[in-house]
Length: 222
Image (cartoon, rainbow, N blue to C red; front, side, top):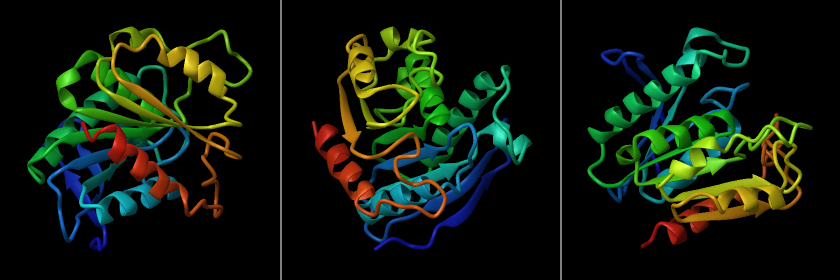
C-alpha cells in the first residue's frame, strides 16, 4: 500500500524541481522519476496511475513538471527549451537520490520521454534504465522527420510502451528504430491505444499500469 503523494519542491536547484512525491509503505530501494509530454503536466492521469502502481510495488516515484511547464501553465515547449528541460530532469534525479538508496530509473511520456532518452545518451550515468511512453518517433504525417539521431549513443536499457494507433510512429517503424540503439531495448505494444495510451481525459485503461510494471520488472530484473 502506498502513501498519499505529497507536493515536492526543491528550490535550491536551477532550474528548480517541482512535482509530487510518492512514497511506498514497503520500499524496495529503487526510485523512478516520471515526467510529462509537450501538452501536459505531471498531473496527467497516465503518470498518476503509473506512479501509484509503481509505488505499491515498492518504488519511490517523483512525478515532476519540466522547466518549460513551470514557466508556462499551458502551451508546448519552445525551440530553446529542450536543453533546460534536460537540466531539470538531472536536478530531479539528484533530488530523488537523497530519498532512495537503490537504482534510479527515468521515464517520461512523449516529449518528456524524448528528453529523458537524450539526457541518458549524453550522460549515461544519470539512470540505470528508461521507461519511454509513446516515444514521438516523428511528427504526425511526417514519417521522414525521424527523432532518432541520439539513438546511436543511447547505452541505457530502455523499455518502450507504444500504442498501435499512435500517429507519432507505427509499431513497425518503432521496431526498426530500436535496432539502432546499442543498449538493450524492448517494445511493449498496446492494442487499441493511440498516443495517450488510453488515458485521454477521463478515459482510463485500468489494466495498463500493472502490465507496464510487470514488463518493467521483468526487463530490468537482470
